[in-house]
Length: 462
Image (cartoon, rainbow, N blue to C red):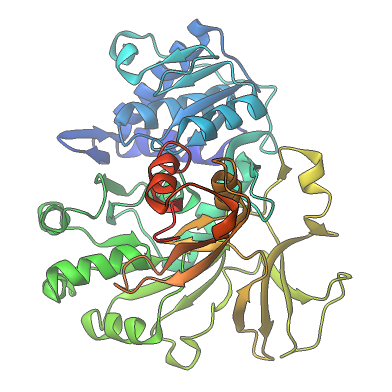
């Protein structure tokens, strides 16, 4: 059953062998593995009743509601492609993604152009489970499309197969050494590959994942660690900095309980890494490097002190990273070049052929990141050739912000990254405006941008 999806096969197995075990906990809702499978099958039935079938697309707004997970898995059952969007996306971005993907239906928000359903409109409890298997599907079919921002400022649709998302989760579990006995606290957004990937990792192993809104309420985070006897969590450096700023070293109280931590999406200073080692001397602290197109390419474990400033090595022997020159030739050890990745988790393609055309050197995906590899295989990152600004783990294209400002009636401007003086977000967006090119004041530009850009993309000063 579900031969196209090994994640669904795992879910079926856990629902059979350990049906009452908690799979997902969201707020006061605790869902067992048996109920998770049943409700995913009910969600599949609802999709069929709407008229949605294999290889069609739906847009799913990634609210942290249990209905999101039911629909996400229900779509997988049918072979429907999930287009995942941030629940905080502005209307301009949503319209762009809708027009690029032409969805049969949008879920979790109201689209002015396409058929839409709010999660509250769905009566999943009353639906009849869809228990059949769609035989036309294969593991190479597109399971989901995530949109990212490239150097041109235009979001690109990343097409990931069922095999891609399974292999990524399997690679991660193998490296971090996750087991069915783990209980993970998830405060990350689930619209990106990091947070969504943690859910898949947990389901694959038959573990339990506790979904929090975010890390803003540190007291709630600590309470969840205690209440559910958590053994791990994932975090971006900005969220870790916030936890430390708000609570000091109080998290040290749980150091013996926390077995693993996964960190990613942005750089972390050496001092912060050393501090984490002091707080968690016996915890497996794993930091990944990767992109939406090639999730979790490399890992480094902080207790590997000699290489703690590297991005580590490829996550497993099924992933290869080469440092290449502009012509796609591998450069010698220690020489600078572009990180290029081949592996079982590398995307099938971009949604549009024009984006895919320059994205590969043969079988190797071009990350656009610059670095070098030592003879011992450890890889060091030097910078981002794609010039994206990394705001709290979210990537911002300077050109996207510049275009938004110029569209307001500004003749010329340039956006750059600056270090967050508070040490929370890592980087912030700063924009310089050519004074003679506009009559708008800084305050007016800031106010007008609120409807044009997500909050994290808005410049802190002009």
